[in-house]
Length: 470
Image (tube, rainbow, N blue to C red; front, side, top):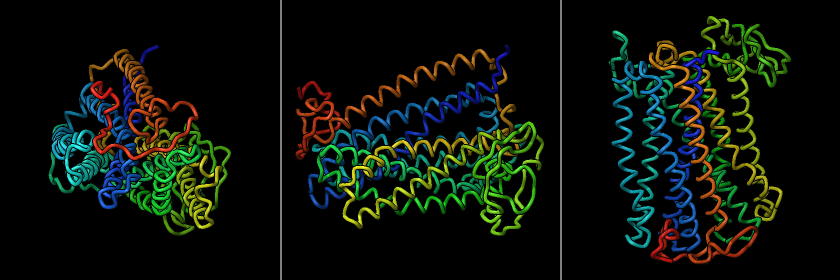
């Protein structure tokens, strides 16, 4: 059997980008939360805020590191697997990725050290400033990355000359037609991810009676945030969908499972898209609802997949179901946030074990929703690498063989499995220890419960690994 280097390269990039995406989507929101916690401690001197800030800084440190490493590996693939694309897009993507390094990585690198190791060694105000700078750095980084990705989705401000993209307008290219929608959508997804993770971990601690004061504060803050952002994300997502309909109608047709250009298109709740037959099987839907959502009229005409040749259609079933997973989990998040508001009003928010357990279970849902969203974004663009201009096949490295692509894919899976296990092991250990003082952390195993006391001001996230303190 002959190995297809194009298919294997796409699978490799999909795996690496999926592995990478779960880290920044968490750290962007978490960095802002840590800055807020440090600000509250600076203002009130309440040790509960201090304990929360230290605990989540430990989590942030390992997740941030995993995100940086996996992101660097991801960028290398542009040269190893997609050299034609790299050469063609270098005039735009080269400077954009360099701007991320200069404006974001340098900022984060300078102040992350102060945040992690300056606790008790620099004035409190300086430590707070470092936390704020790290949070700003994560947003600057996402700005450039999403600008680059959005340009590939909705290219603008360039012209293709002799196989290379030449920038005609930097403003038009950077702020391309889909950029702001993606930036807002991803930014809110980051806060939702951080909010649900913090809420779930806080609920886990409350179920075990661990540092009740601090974790009640954390849970309360997160549920207020989720109550506002979860419905707002649905609104932003709707605007993003309308923008996608304008610039990438084939992607929307795949998302809706709509094969023919027509009006009165139903909103399909369930279907089995058959791409070979160019139809759906076992459809269950709400009549005319897709036309109402996309065209604001029951008779609104929605583009169909038949507008393009079958070879220019994305993998419809994958896009169709990934979109429903994302939307379904989004509505679940809204429901959980509303239930939290009801329980708060009844005064049982912190004493309802079923709700607290559901929050623990919700920790994974934003990550799954984000990955499903990326599948819709990237698979829905197929077969285009730069939408409407360059296909995946045209961007592939000419000398790449199927065997080479398979070898590196297996290597990435093996190495990343070890990295992921190590990261989860460390995070699990930190969570199990909770917010206990130095010297008592190793005493906590299994279901052992003990409340936390205020931490020493000189305690840093890595003091436990410092033999000089043993």
